[in-house]
View 1 (cartoon, rainbow, N blue to C red):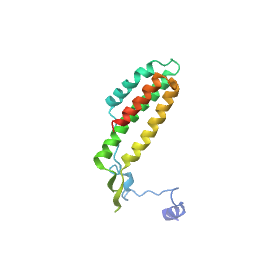
View 2: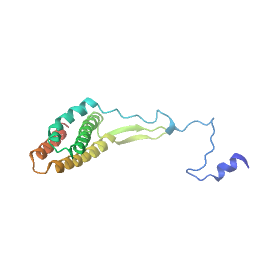
View 3: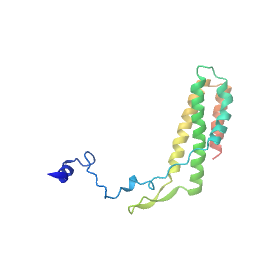
View 4: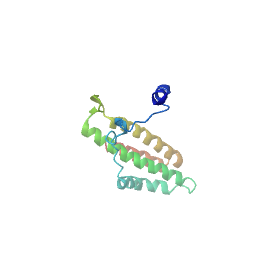
Length: 154
């Protein structure tokens, strides 16, 4: 029965695959398909974290590690917001795409969706930090003000 029988018996969409070394690789397997995102500049993240450090440092020892982790996340999200907004401002609301295989066109700038997602996550993380420091406190006001400053940079 041979290889043809095995390939015929394999379920569509997965299962047993008979390899053929002479076949060209799919476009998805090539490195030119996806462009890696640029890493966040750690100095910018460190600067944003330094802005939050006075608020975190006054917390009790038992919650400070969790608060510092949340603050680091906030700093990274803030830098991500800046990066997404810069790309959106530079390239506009729609961008051209060409995924190979004859599919081309325009689509919504993916930086916009990433910006919205990062903004929501930043708001959630700031909300958690506000709960940790206590709503209505000077530290909570400082966190809310810091968040407003990050969005005003846009």
